[in-house]
Amino acid sequence: MPKFEDLRDMLADIASLDPEVIEPDSAFFDDLGIETVMIMEFMNSLENKYGIQIPESDVPKINSISQLIRYINSKSN
Image (cartoon, rainbow, N blue to C red; front, side, top):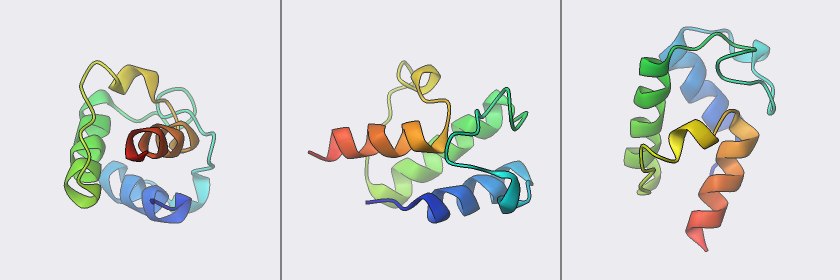
């Protein structure tokens, strides 16, 4: 199961952000100003690291790391 800190650090690296500004409920677009292409790169990295599939149709439903963790946990059951 992914931990917040691991996902935060991965996202911070892709989006060139300070990890300390990313909170569990920080909205990717509204709070962090992350571009769509960065989110897609982040999702692809997650798929490779955790061996999961995140359909493109599900990506707009995932707007924060806390939502992402819930999504991954729901797919892992």
